[in-house]
Length: 170
Image (tube, rainbow, N blue to C red; front, side, top):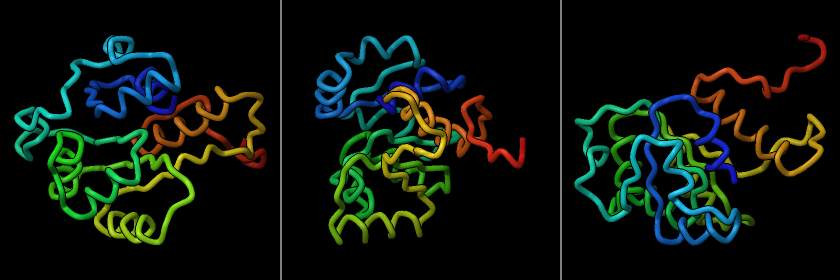
């Protein structure tokens, strides 16, 4: 849901990489397939395509958003493993000091997960557990997803109408 909302709302050049389990989860949780998302991206890459342009630091990109990201994938990235396109792009983002946002999907987190998240944070990644804000009093699930996505967009430097502002600032 969160990744789909981000793809729909972010008005920028975007590319999509889905893992095998990402495809499965997308279908189970939203009823969508990668073909439904293709209209929101310039190109879809296979996760096993390590020859894709973004697997090299020579290919510029502004940010890499992993939304959602499993704790297993996060831990592989923290260990320096780049054996899939998803993990390789994260390695490139870290080594080239590009923005890396990891929307961590699981809870609870073990000590191992927390240590790996801290390691990635120290390396420059932004770790965002999928915990939608409630201070704006969402009326439904879509409101919660939109508010979380608005926070991701703000980290990417994109202003949104959904950004929460305290009443004292209005």
